Image (tube, rainbow, N blue to C red; front, side, top):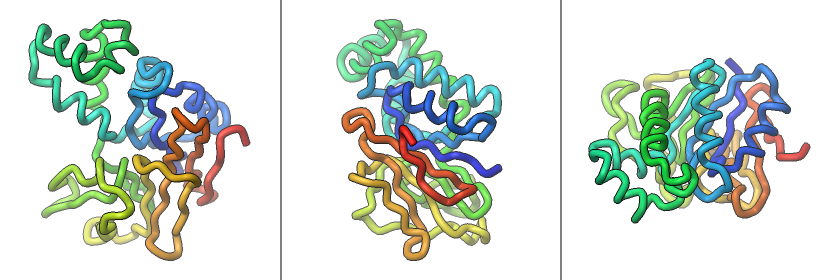
Length: 214
């Protein structure tokens, strides 16, 4: 499919707008953490959901979506509202206090989102490579949502995907994108965009980084 890999947007719709303008017609892989920190998490989430419905994007879980969903999915409405007002204040504010609308979007996100995705010789996951069990659907833990480069990088799951050569991740903020295709076979893209204003994506066709504004 030759996708564009998009790291943590964190509520910054202008970065997603740039990607859509720069790569019209290209499929996107969104690495998660669509929400929190930036000026309009609601718009980012809804744009991503529309892209997924149109099969123009694959959505992956980020630790921020996982945190909000895990905390609220089994709660009834009054308890959900209390959680958003106390612990999910950024999302509560982004949705102008409309907890039901926020939960509707999180529910849709949970239906679309994957822990990881494989495309050709590339694996994409939010933070790190998945820890798999007996089959490709058997994700044993949430390390792929939270691990950082200073922890041991799990091997590529070539037992299930023999063509894999490298993986692409966000989550860990880097001063510059890290591309190590010849060594560990890994790419890290998160530049802390909501704070730094720096943003980049991975073009899986050219196998190169493209930076915001280029």
